[in-house]
Image (tube, rainbow, N blue to C red; front, side, top):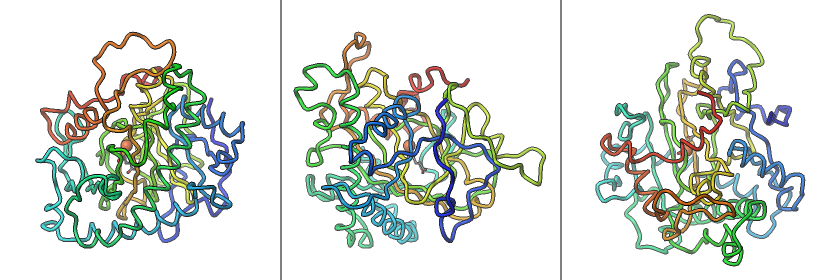
Length: 386
Ligand SMILES: O=C(O)CCC(=O)C(=O)O
Ligand SMILES: [Fe+2]
């Protein structure tokens, strides 16, 4: 069984000014991987990271690096993330009439604003419970014509650039580790393996995402529907709980450390039926997860695990939840086909990264598109709990 490898020191236990994550709910045993040790090419740490990518496709990355190593500076990323939490609060505080000016869904673009309830969380068309703002990497790096954005966001270009550079470099560290562990085809090795499909200055669907969900009562509603991520590597900063992963049957949840005094039927535990478990946010760390593109490249050796967001548990539900994401995706024209030895004949026609992202992202806004917008959920649930 994969098991978590940390005892929670007080500075890892909670975020200042927020209600603590409760110890009365089951949590997912994500491995805690040290970025510092990955940068030092520590073999044991690389093995643990590889294992986490195959077994669950989710892990914590400890960003508290000693000093910067080239472009990869975990401490700088933590500071940028802190600042971006403030920027996103300011943005979401704008009047709704201002924010909707930046919703570009009718132009077949997933960048910009998505209003509260404008997405759906299931095939019945149940509305989501959050707002998004998606910022394109290519827009910030001036690789594409500038998209309209509110003044309040326009003044932070240097911060976005720094955040994109750090997040993208971390994703490339993980991609090169995966490249060396996968049995890549000789042609793929010659072409530079996985990092060569994710160049910072090539056109791609890479993006920053700001997420806001207002305080929520403790009910069974899902704020962000179950999904797998579309791209390659996701870097996620959470301060409040609410994120849940659906564990495969070979991984057990960490049981609650104590029981709720109230007793009785508890919504949080009901939300953990069928293998769902909460991900406890950890200060100093980001959560890293793999997306569908890596499942396709690796012929399902790597896992893009299903996850969703529900109300933050217990008293955390009383405060607004913000989260910050960086999605690293293959360059737009990369075909999402198998790149490893022993791949079966491709059944489906290979789509490009751009086609895949458009189909998946926009389908989550329209009920008639829901069925077509699926990802690699079938593979993600291989050996999973039913
Ligand atoms: O807000 C979170 O914790 C998760 C967000 C997420 O899964 C996503 O935006 O794809
Ligand atoms: Fe996600």
